[in-house]
Amino acid sequence: MIDNELQKLKGKIDLSRQEMLDVMDLIMSGSLQDNEIEEFLIAMNEKGASINEISSAASVMRDKSLKFNIGDGTHIDTCGTGGTGLHIFNCSTASAFVAAACGAKVTKHGNKSISSKTGSADFLLEAGADISHDRSLLESIFRKTGFIFLFAPLHHSSMRYVMPARQKIGKKTIFNLLGPHTNPCSARKQLIGVYKRSLVETFSSVAKELEMEHVIVVHGNDGLDEISITDDSFISELKDGKIKNYQVSPKDFGLSYGNFESIKALSPQESFEKVSLAFAGREGSVQDMIAINSAAALKLSGIVKSLKEGVELSKSAMNEGLAQSKLESYVKMSNNL
Image 1 (cartoon, one colour):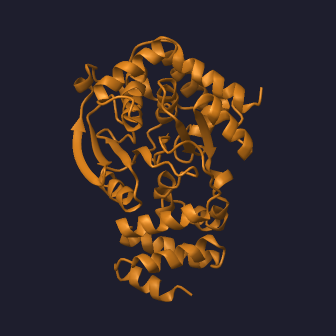
Image 2: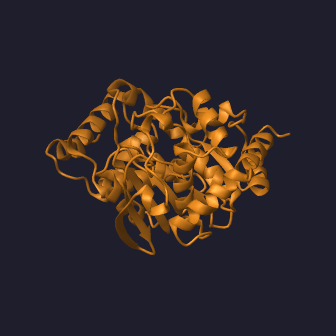
Image 3: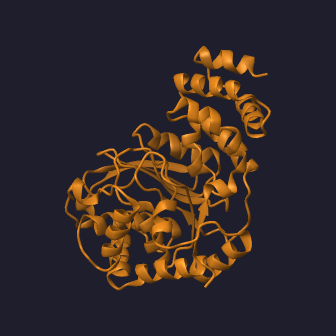
């Protein structure tokens, strides 16, 4: 059924947009056998996915997702790729709450841990949240708190057709690149951390093809899929159809380089404890790293004009207890209390 496409991939030839759309539609509608999907994903891995192939695949995944209109178009997402294997605390989730505490509207897309010790969903469950709620409750939570968590498996049921092949392959495939581009609430502003340096500019280009409004793609030189506190970070920023690449250092924000051990977390419990201390005003590498990343989210939201301004506002939100209050409010609302 997809013999021509497979031959092209095996010959290291990129698929056209229409070819990729057609194959992805077959995959995500359950029209291909597991072995066909496996062969396709392996061939794509060996060739390497192009910008066009990623954006085309993301378009199909978006179409197949359970999505709904929410917010006024200003909401942001902080969903990244994960996949670094470096086991640090849940920075993107913590940063999302800080941004929300500062007035950003956040529709956070995420999942349970795959390659790390704790994913966004694991962190929120540890905090006591209920992440498996229906659409009407999601809308109510968002109206009252300005934050919702979109648990990926509840919104992407077509992924069930891909799971057997992905599990058999046992390594990253193109599907590991699609989650950040498929927010169920169609967020057009996003902070995206990527697990590999070469993906930074690729992802900003994919975002441009998907007609995103404002996207900041980040990768730490230490390998993190965040703006790092322990090293400099590379950023590719898409805004108004134009892409700008630059590097940032903690020193740019008046911060010191942190120690990698201090940001590690080997369980959801440890991650939650580190974030709770930062939210309670404990200064250090964890709070600094949350502040840098929430600053990017605030810039995307238009609340601040610069990352430095965002760092200062984010620190205040943590030290004054606003971030902790936002997290507690979300947990309470998610349990329909």
